[in-house]
Length: 247
Image (cartoon, rainbow, N blue to C red; front, side, top):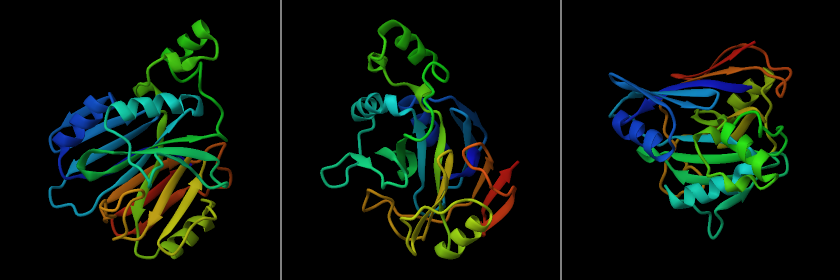
């Protein structure tokens, strides 16, 4: 279920545009009352709503071989969020992934995630990494981390009033449920794209002050080779929160 686009809100398009453009170096398109950010194969469009309540979460996919470079980049830039004394979070076995969390604009919690079950993109997705690989063999860490290393939006956080019921709805559509869910938290999707279905009012890991809200969000995804069995369609998850899966 590869995430192609996300349409949501931000309390400040100026802050959001400046962060994604200056801190992460991503392509940003500005328009009146909105800003569009390109993250690899995905696009996030933020519309301004100064009265929006709560904070948001997105995870961006990187190649596992670029994870250490991502850590160095984030540590020197926006900084890393910690869970106790840990800044590198090893996911549970079902995920086979590792993550780094960092503060984003408008009080968002952002994440870099490397999914080991996905094939490497080196030599195909990033020109700079491919060049370094040919010059230096396996020592690709010689190339600084950059926006081309962000391959797509891998996760979108969505608040719903009934987490278990929504997870059941998605599972019936072939959008798999991960085994480490609860009544307030249920990851749903596949290694090529996932929704983090949560209850409003809880906090976004690993923070204690970034609170899940209920902003309107439309996620458009496409069924892919890594997500067989997904049933295309439009899924109303909660008022203003929609998933559209294309064939």
